[in-house]
Image (tube, rainbow, N blue to C red; front, side, top):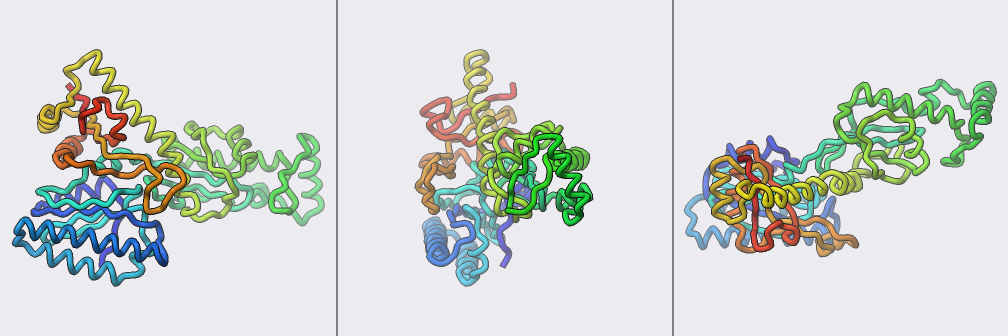
Length: 387
């Protein structure tokens, strides 16, 4: 069985090219990340119910293709594969048409949803792809610092090798009395403070700050400095690194803790949340503000009636399409203590999926916001127009 793949622009582009047959089945399945025990069982039951609902709809439509049989075979394969359920993310997207079933990991919580239509229901997916923000995370640490590259909820080690420790970078031999004395003298000449990490002998402030500058020089010379950099480390070390760094796009928020040698998964969720708060949400707010500005100054550059939005999309005039398929709630399969963004599918919005696909394929941007902040309260979608 082929496992799901991570969402990307290319993956969705390929999906739309390869699966032009109808009917098209779209299933959004909320899952537990790396589920075990009762959570695995819960996810499997939910999956079984959604597949059966899809087959029921196909039967009601009098579908004569082999899709019902293909879905049943896929379901049996999924339910037997325990490894599959241990590798889940916040959700799963399944897109099926006769002769093709493809699955994608979702980087966001989702409501359960099934649709059988002439096209896949991907409006919120186009928004997720538009939200993609590549970035770096630097684990600021005296031992085993690491640079990670991130996109959506994926985080992996970047192809930039950093020195493994302060000692290695500065050639300090902690067992050498002469070197120990040198560090002590340098410490006394500055602040005389040690940071007391791990109960071992600490390096002098000057050595540590020199190390931050070495890391920063490496990153500035080898990384894409147009991307934002998120720092992860102790409060004091992150503060020191900010002072020493020349990197042009260090984010204001950081991840607090000791992350030397950390696996990417230890940072992925917190990193994605900060990227959402610091970069994605402000863009959404700017898009809403731009709609209000254009409506007041150039009302012919906005559309909010569904027919007008559809016509503008068909003619390639939509620059940004705002849809209300997002809500914040603690009521997810994870029972979060804080409200999380969740893909939502209000009734009566089926037509938006084709409109969103048309906008996306014409290089427009799909922006998913809470219905409560939609510029037109009664509208399921609004658009800012290119001309």
